[in-house]
Length: 215
Image (cartoon, rainbow, N blue to C red; front, side):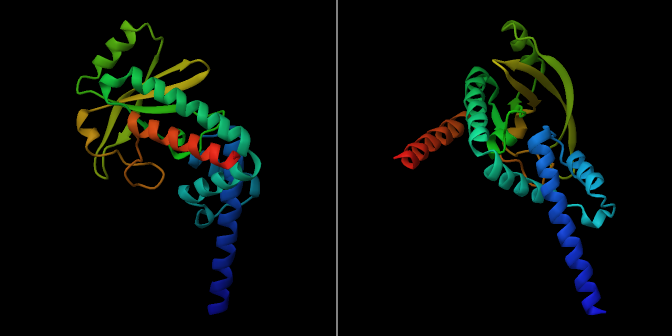
């Protein structure tokens, strides 16, 4: 009975591994950004129906890093650098709203399909609306649900626009969110965020590492 349980657990681990890597491939090649959509599509493709075999978001993220490293290293590095530089320009532009970079561009997973995601902070969300209008930026308004912590969620303004071929999303959060990062939908932990100064340092460190590697 013990061996049968071990065998079953091994099969579940193997299925989770296969699903994580198939979901990662779908995200890398098909531009899917939603982890749930990717894992469900992977399950359909592999004919795996039991929920116990579905990998966690972090497992898919790890598999995506590995896939990019093996199959898309040069192109992905260029796309990532482009988006980080675009993010820095945007953060300088929106400096008055204490911008923070979040998501794949910060985490190093961005590719040609990725959007630059910024959190802007203002207790009066309409201040961002007025700023966009004054700067003649044609942005589209949507709503985004943000988890401020494990108990509280809030719907915030989400402005979407493109600049020089790079898509942007600006979520407008209350100033209090500067002190405590919202909860990530990937692992239920506080989101990793970067200020303009931190992103500038990250880009400088990457530049030094690149020169050293090429030396």
